[in-house]
Length: 179
Image 1: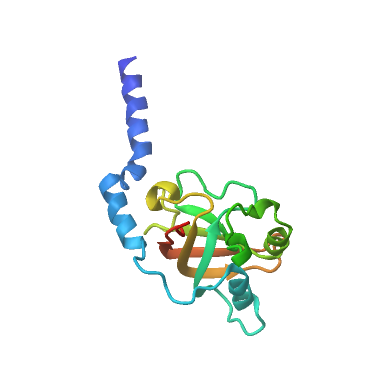
Image 2: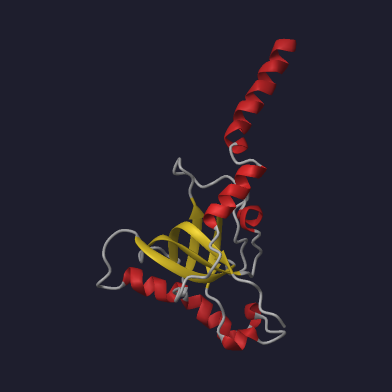
């Protein structure tokens, strides 16, 4: 009996080993490496990024882009639990910045977001897999927050839902506007 308990504990430790590679100290180093202190100049909106990626003159394959968006997924959960991955959508225009504005119930925002692509963002580790640290923890992100992300992007116009796949290499988290 005792031997079986040891095997179960050992298996549990082995299963947790890959995640322990991203301990608290490593998360801080990872965060420091991926966070951009200053916002890049002239980031694209998701709509402009789609036009860049799907235009008739667009080169094939992933393209280096910088995209600004709002963390959100049209009523769905934008984060993948325990993954450095999240979804961005178009940032509402100026009328959406007014106090009390509810983009989810605004007909203008709904129409604009219905035509805009979402951006599926993921940060990969050296092993080519999504970093196993929740983006909310790693970058302090919240739903509705505005960010600017750089990386390699692809867009497949054949998909039923317009989604840009962005393998990110850096992120800038915008400070909330003071009210």
